[in-house]
Length: 291
Image (tube, rainbow, N blue to C red):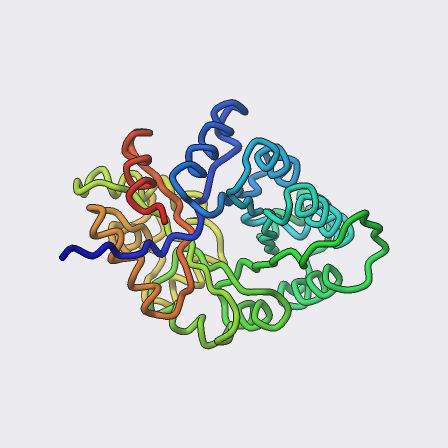
C-alpha cells in the first residue's frame, strides 16, 4: 500500500512587488485553490506591505496572508497594531504578523537611530500586546506574531514575547539549536529557498540569485562564519558550498527530504520560497508540496 507523506509546508513566500496586481491576485488565488495555508509577503521597499496584504485578503476567501517580515523601523508599534488588527478584523482572522528589525539600512534611510535589536524587539512586541490607544469596532483573537530571528539572543526574545520565530537560510543543526532557544511551546518556522531542478548549473544559478541580496549583510556573514564558512564563501556571488547548504535544489523528493530534516530537527513547519528557471517549474514544486 502506498502512503502519502503530509507536506511540512505551511506557507509560501510570495515576491508580490515583482508582480502586476492582476498577476499577484491570480498567483495567490492559485495557491489557495491547491490548498496552501498562507502567503507571506516580504517588505522590500516597494509596495506597502500591509496595504498589499489587505488587497490580497479582499480577493481571497480561505488562505491566510502574512507580513514576512514587516520592518519595525518602518512603523511604530501603534501603526503596526492598527494595521494588524484591522486586517484581522476585516478578513475574519486571516492575517499573520511577521516582524523583524531588518538591518541598519532600514533605520538609516529613515533617519532613525539604530537600537539594540533584542531590546528593540522586546519593547516593540510588548507594546503591540499592551494597552495601546486603539479603538476597534470588533474583537478577534490576538493576531499571531512571529519574529525574524537567527542569533541566540533574538531567538530567545522571540520565544519570550511572541508566538514564535521565523529563521531563514539555516541548517538543520541551527534548527535544533533554535528550538531549544525559542522553547518547546512556541512555533518555529524555517523559511527555505527551493528550486526544482536536477541540473547543478541551474540549481546553483537560481540559488545564487536567491541568496545574492544577503551576501553583503554582516549579520548573515556572522551567522555563516559561525557555521564553518568564511569570506571566500560569500564573495564573488557565493560559493557552491554556500548555495548547496542554504538552498534546497534537486528533485521533488530531494527537496522534501531537505524540508523533513528541519522538521526532524525541531521545526514546526516550512515557509517555502520557491524559485525557478520558469513559472511552470515553480508551480510544479508548489503543487507537489501543497498540504
